[in-house]
Image: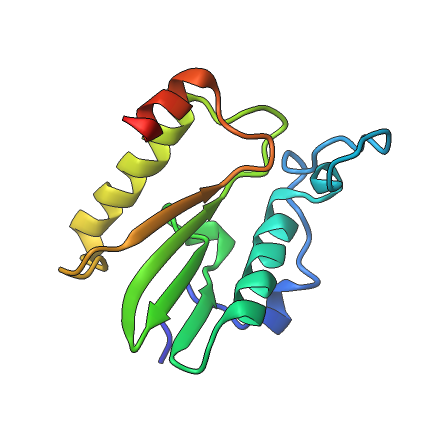
Length: 141
């Protein structure tokens, strides 16, 4: 039986976006049109990219949107959690406060559910609009 935060991808592809998650569309740009994707569709795109790149000893899971707890995509390597990907398709750059909120949320839910392994895990925050200077400084330091 799968944990409550797992859902098969075929259930998610047609899922409606929450009304507050759909960014505005800007077609006059040289960048990829991430603004045309709502938050959940951006997560699904990330999942599909990871599935396409996974090898035979990796498994990729898209976490249920209503209970992701700071984890949108999980990548297991040989059965052990190796990477956590959090997708943030915001209309602005990710701020230091946003970044700290995501990290604290992840650690607090680990205290409750104990899902992080003893081995190191790579944490990735995918943000097409980038990071504010203070957030970037926090990551760098």
